[in-house]
Amino acid sequence: MSDNTTAKIPLVETISELVENQGLFVSNGYSDVQVTVMENNEQVRKILRLPIRSVSLDEQIRNETEPPRPPVIEKLIKADSESGRMLGMSEDGLVMVFDPTDRAYVEAVEAHGRENAWRKAISAINIPWKNADGSTAETYEEKRAVLRSNGIHFDHIIKICTDVNRLTAWNEERADFLSGG
Image 1 (cartoon, helix red, strand yellow):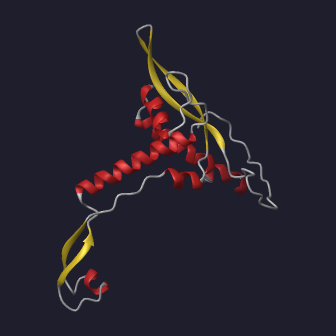
Image 2 (spheres, rainbow, N blue to C red; image 1 turned 180 degrees about the vertical axis):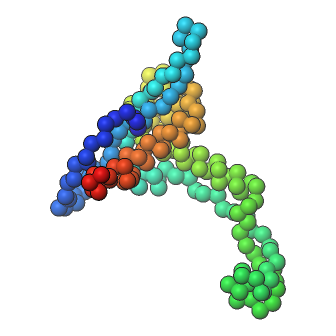
Image 3 (cartoon, one colour; image 1 turned 90 degrees about the vertical axis):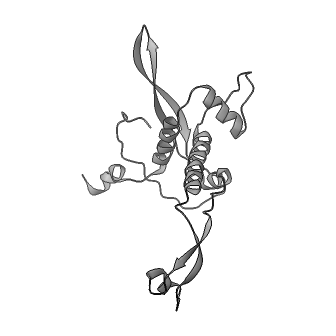
């Protein structure tokens, strides 16, 4: 979202009823991402302003991929350890436990996070999407290809996701008017 907008006191609206499909919780705004271009043999910073919208909970759940599961390993648990006492063990023994430190699992978790960030950013960008042939890009794969063909970096994806979160985040800066400060 643009950092150069002037802060305004939010409009407070009391909701007296909820009616299906009112769109009460939809937020809209912008994500400003930076690129550097060459003009006359000089590097010039350029800000690309993308219209964005909030991503509903239903849409996020529908778009998210299944998280990876850690592998299960056998581990010797001592009866007098904290884990042994929690498990009510009377003697040392082998127990099947999840291994969240497994290298392949950690890499899968990181890849899962990146994939879901792509999905959130693509859902949030609120402009028409076009393929190279001029047809409408409708699927996630087509939209991701459009972004990739335009040279998007993962830093841009993170910035878009952060700005989407800021559309609905209630923070002290925005709520400061309540304190009179």
